[in-house]
Amino acid sequence: MYKLIRSSLKPTAAPRAACGRNWTLAIKVEVDEEGADPNILIFQRNVYHDEAGDPFVDVADVHDLNFLPVGRCEDMEEEHPAEDHIPYYRSDHVTLDCFTADEAEEIWKKITGRVTKLVKEYHAARDLEEKEVFNA
Image (tube, rainbow, N blue to C red):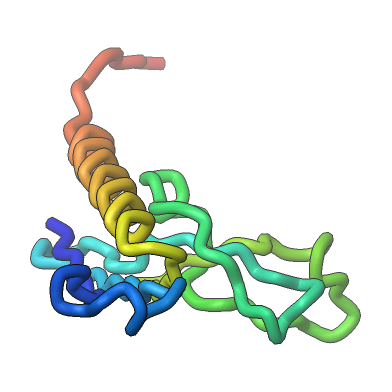
C-alpha cells in the first residue's frame, strides 16, 4: 500500500569525519493502492518561530488521515495562529538531520514500524461487519 523511499548516507561509504554530527535522512512516501493518501507524515506548525521550520511529529493514524489537513496552513487575517486553527498538517516527505548514523537508522525503523501499523489499522477500518439492524 505504502512505499517509503529512504535517501541517506551509507555509514560504510562515508568516513565519520566527513559527516561530522549531521547524518541526513530523507523519506518520500508513494502509494500503490488506488485511493490511498501518501500524506502520512505529520508536522506541527511552529507558530512562534516560523523561520526555524516545522518539526516532524509522527506517522498518521486513520483518524489523522481523515482529520488533519494536507500541507501547511497559512495564517488568516484576524486569526490567532495558536488558538484559531489546528497546528498540525500532513505531508508525503520529510528530511531529518540526525546526530549519528545510528540515530538515522533508529528513526527509519520507528517510521517503517508506524507505517506498518497504519496499514493494518487502515484495512481493519474498512473491513466492517454488520452488527445490528434497526427497523422503526
